[in-house]
Amino acid sequence: MSVLRLPGIVSTDHVVQVPLDHADPAGERIEVYAREVVAAGREREDLPWLLFLQGGPGNKAARPLGRDGWLGRALEDYRVLLLDQRGTGRSTPADRRTLPLRGGPAEQARYLAHFRADAIVRDAEAVRRRLLGEEGRWSLLGQSFGGFCTLTYLSLAPEGLREAFVTGGLAGLRTGAEAVYRAAYPRVAEKNREHYARHPQDAEEVRRIAGHLRSRPVRLPDGGLLTAEAFQSLGMLLGTGSGSHVLHYLLEEAWVGGAGGPELSDTFLAGVQAHLSFAGNPLYAVLHESIYGQRSVDPSGTRWAAQRVRGEFPAFEVDGALAGDGPVLFTGEMIYPWMFDTDPALLPLKEAAELIAEREDWPDLYDPARLAANEVPVTAAVYHADMYVDTAHSLETARSVRGLRTWVTDEWEHDGLRVSDGRVLDRLIRMGRGEV
Image (tube, rainbow, N blue to C red; front, side):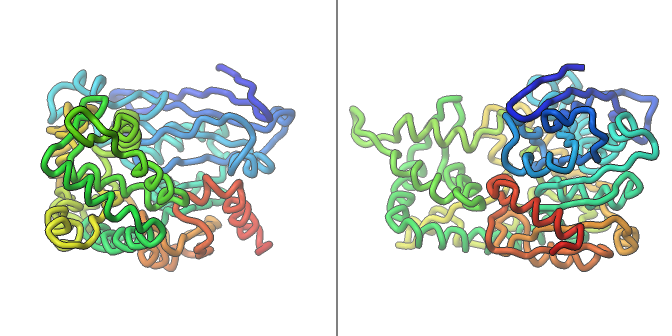
């Protein structure tokens, strides 16, 4: 068990073996890694535990550098556990290098079917029993997809929880993938409008870049292909507090004078790659739409819902925008099948991703009856103009979970937990204690 000391914190490693398929405990096993973090000097105190579930899917937990941000606030009251959800970080990895060891696309898809929220929750329960014992309970903080997992936790194993906090992550309990994206495109369009109002000079710059890429797609430094549609997906940035400015600064350095005339600069292409490549989190792309898959809601599977629904919103089509005088709109948190052709990290997983998109029998992730009878105290931050999670869906879910208290705010964007220096978490903790 490795121990690491950093400014103001002490970190301890934990590795737990869990079944790949929790319905088959005697079958194949994988490893799940978790990092215990406690305030320096309080290592021996009997502190309550707080499990943190990261946004995603397919993202490892953040690597702490010290006692700052939301973690600093959490360490005032808790011993924190940062879980690398299965397939990510130091948990048994699943990517283009490891998945071929499973066999062909069908075997890979069957393997990855065990990497959704229900399995993550059961992994967490195995870790809880190891660290706290059968009767021990811990608190839970779920950010974004981690909030989705929190609802699954409350559905499958509420006996393991003493309280729960959710930030930007109340999923629609009976909202299928098509409905998710049908609600998302108008929100993304509004974020585009806000961006162009904030940075009006960007409208012509984006049209110029999109037109260039429409006629001549460009290779990124890693060999990925930057097409006009791939360029549009930089709109993922627009849902964070500083994302609009990050995008603007990226566009400022788009062009250099080359031997044959203006060319997209290496600085720009390197920046684009940093935002678009899924090399560090391939499961985000492979499993993204499956987080909405439930047989009682989407009996025919998700089937690339973002791509299918996009046709209902012609304002996002590049050619139509370039033919007129309107702005080219960026897209948001949408995964499209063409990404598995343009991103070298995803190309080897293309066939497995197709099989996952066509799967029709995803088990339900939420138990509305159990949530309606919930006894675990839950407080949730719902961001009024959240680009990633629909506010109306979140509030409908909040009304469906007994005792859940919401704080609806326009003070922060979806990344409020990360950028608020602990203020979002502090508000939820005080709400749970009845101090707000």
